[in-house]
Image 1 (cartoon, rainbow, N blue to C red):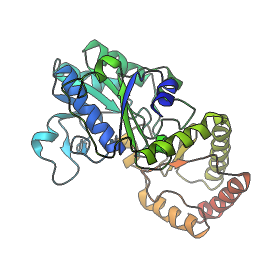
Image 2: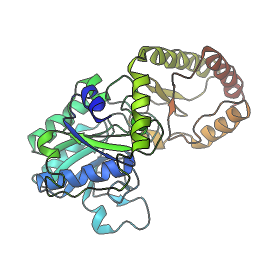
Image 3: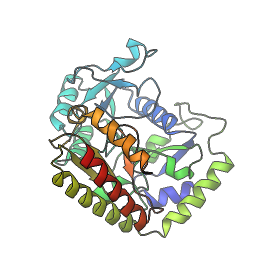
Image 4: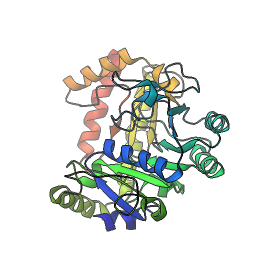
Length: 330
């Protein structure tokens, strides 16, 4: 399984398996700190990287400040080592680096934000992150737990041509069994114990059941035509946009290949602020009305819809029919 992932994702030269995406990002952050000898981590406002202390941080005021915990039980001392920048705002990232010039170990981000709906990178934002981290001798970590093998038999990084130093993955590479992975440049990964001084372990990491499930899943995906699900999602987006226009609803759709989200917001959503300004009550009504008609969307404005190879033309027609009724009611 490791060889398959290495051959598919250009930046991964060596990797370690974990049991979840949370573990993968936790170990990647520790590794970045151990490799660079620096303390601070930069994450994006609204970016989600699991449920460990260093990931459960957001910027409550929406400003470029030290992060504040978004969960009880996270010590202030921990939260103050995590800096929060704005996705799609390279200037906010550059400002953090100027303020903490030689203290930032890494920037960690989902290349496409997937836990506040779908937010696409704009204006060469990912390229800017690569340039900024190289300029200040910091690492760039792409959290591809959602996007890895989602849009092609590769990472999203390979689609956009941006090479991070470390990558985390999960979900898909285990075929639904508990799994995570962190990997990247060989010189960085060499710092992981027992070869290096950054400790990482897990009794069930790389367990045979998950590895077999992952191999079987990637074997299935290797021969798939990913353009078919992108085309499916594109057609669904077009049909839903037509209904939104017909019923004069303040809503916009963000889509990246085969994942998308409807925001009840008349403005284009390109960051955390835009996402949280959307009408969540209306989304909740839509969710329950769709569910009554047999269409199961995620129950939150801030989650994401995924088209899969399992979806059929009949499913598309049923979804559009249900939306026609629901949007008319809304």
